[in-house]
Amino acid sequence: MNDARSEKASSENVLQVQGLQKFYHQGLDELHILRGVNLTVQRGERIAIVGLSGSGKSTLLHLLGGLDSADAGSVLLNGVDLAAASDREVCQIRNRHLGFVYQFHHLMADFDAAENVAMPLMIGGQSRRQALAAASEMLAQVGLANRSKHRPAQLSGGERQRVAMARALVTAPDCVLADEPTGNLDEQTAADVNELMVSLSHELHTSFIVVTHNIGLAQRMDKVYRLHNGLLSQDLAA
Image (cartoon, rainbow, N blue to C red; front, side):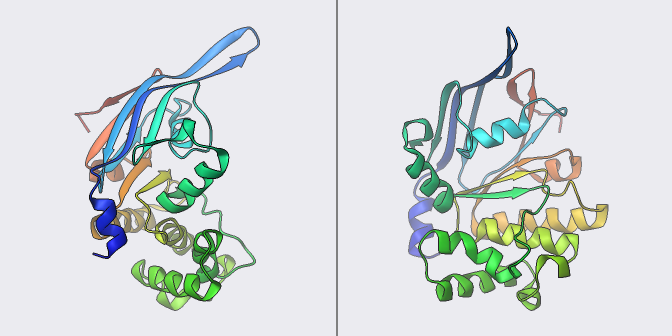
């Protein structure tokens, strides 16, 4: 384990969420999406969040990732309250400590796989040469060493999602937030990506929070939580 990972491992709780609320105004009505969500995620822990469509799962992930602000409550990442941080600080925290994977890969069409994976590192200040070297190593870890020079249009759906996974992990984040990461894949490809996610989490000691309708994936996680009526509760039956 390198020094950066040794330092990260010294803090057991990566994410702490307390009393998180989010509501929207719809005419004269107030629509409560989250009513007081509490969650603690330990280093290397894998969490699945399930629930009906429209229950607020993606909204919750956006709040955890600092992509939106809560109306009440707090999100602490490594003890840092995102609500108390400036916009610039939140951007730096996202770049250095969080990875994101979505149902659609959101790769940049004009860049090859290695360039797509290297982008977070270059945004964080690394030289192009250093970033591409790290990206190549990460692509090898997801089984795409021979596809690094291919652009997204030249890759299969499963390969594109593996590139997205490599991009999320290349900065050695504390936690990866994944929103339906296999929702756009066929059953076998989804199973392969699920297996990759679990193995990388073990290998890199990275926490994962995965929103999914895929019961098989949810059951591979350490804990399953259900979001219902704006509240999050552990699903012991999963």
